Image (cartoon, rainbow, N blue to C red; front, side, top):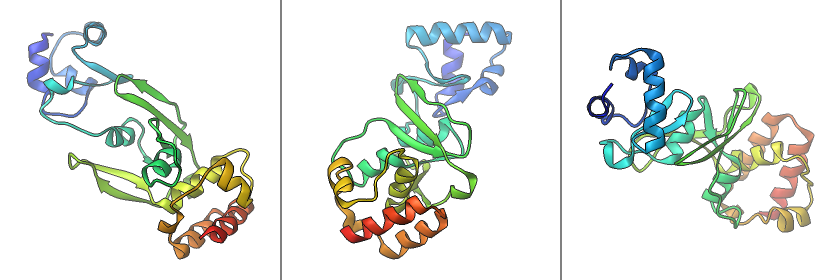
Length: 205
């Protein structure tokens, strides 16, 4: 399997896997060894087991890390700290791309970034919208209301007090929250913790 042949086949795609490698011939074992060598030399980037991309200067197609977060674990949508930072609802700049998924979750760390996933029940997998990244790839992101409620739901030591939210979480820019949507989403959680937290948040609006 020659690198030039891989470039011809894979350069038009954002990522590629074993299915594409199979078309280049050679045995599966040889292909695996070759990909390890190319990853070590920087000719390919290993994203996770069985999934790769070419270096940016070798690709005709570009993608965002937000799109990649959706791709590495599907179904999933961006939420929690990353989206709270994206919406400027917390002062910290978050570099780890945090998502929620109905699957058994595992983090992925590769040369492009660090991607964390938290498990959420299937009945709570909603509250997201489809957007397009800067390269026109579709991706799923939580609304401001769902990102906040997901965070509260999965936060182990959340306290429904104004002081806690202002000093520990340092919530800000809450004017973008839609009160009606926040109340509707809160009810769908069927959680006392979420109900109490929502009352506290509404008191800050």
